[in-house]
Image 1 (cartoon, helix red, strand yellow):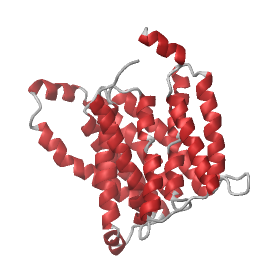
Image 2: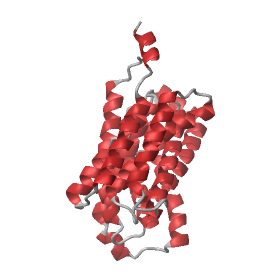
Image 3: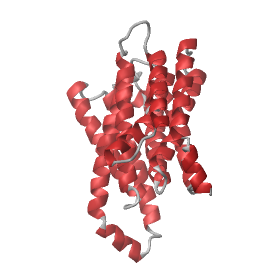
Image 4: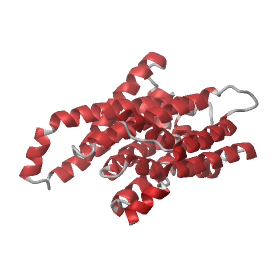
Length: 303
């Protein structure tokens, strides 16, 4: 089996921990701001927070490295634009959905990207085994237990967060394509300004300009979500995912779901019913099952 750098895996694990606790900041941030305004400001803060980092590390780059980056500037801009649009759509769907569901449920449903990512691989002519389809069925049943409350209708917030998981899957695939070709921190900085612009357009159309007092009252969750969840977390994802199989990366990143449940219970006192806990367990089983190597493949690789 191919081994990935421990440093990259640790960076992805740290990102998942930051995102999991970040669900609390996202929920609290909407006490005074609309979801689009919160996303627009947090993404802008994330982009601004990375500018000093770019200037600092830029001083230590060799002339050859700088020449290479200038040659790849077009690829960097395209990658930043694609990542920013995917992130903007995903984060807005998630933020709006969290108005109608709990932090724990939002975290677990978002983690559905762990199953969606390998399925998207079908469009790139990658084979999908029986084990993966079994994991999809298990995940769908877990999602049913988690989201359905006495009817066969998906609740509004759950559906929005599920669509967010699909968008985050696209975000992971885009990063997998562009991260080996460009500087990860530069692309991360661009994506935040693009995501902020996308959220700002949605904000102006749906919410209007927020009052300065409301922004000030939300300064703590904005700074946490902007600097840590956005600036640090997504940069750790881009840098850590370089050279790592996207399905393995998505497995590690999905641990944010566990952290979101613990953070929601610890800070917001959001409990879950036995039915919802069982749904979470089944979804997490599906998440792990989807990433287990095939026995025959593992035997060939170790032979």
